[in-house]
View (cartoon, rainbow, N blue to C red):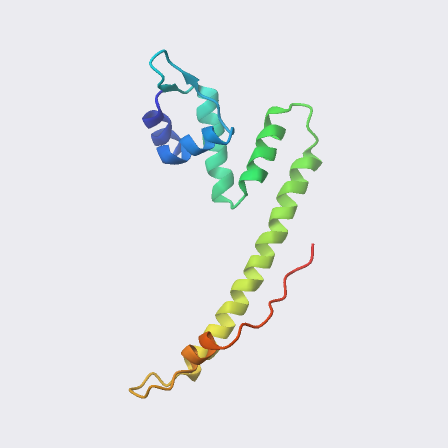
Length: 137
């Protein structure tokens, strides 16, 4: 298969596939004219990566998950550890988004939205930044 075929079948853009090759996540064969030739196993890896990335796993997580996937003597605990750590990051991001929504909702409520120049939204954006609290790991 050529890159167009695997792009269509995996749902990934050709540019992303070339990037995954560049960073060593996939290693398609090369024909004598230099074109990439993808095997079924490459397509399977790309589909795996597409799904993992759609769940928000980092490239490093994807690399580790792929290594575990091909290792038939893997411990499922290793896979669960990666997924659990990612879940903690998702929960932290949700908390950040909730805080952002709360702040922005308050500012929108406080803004009169009339013809006057006073605007609490702009005032808040121009204020010195407040230290953010990050979740501990």
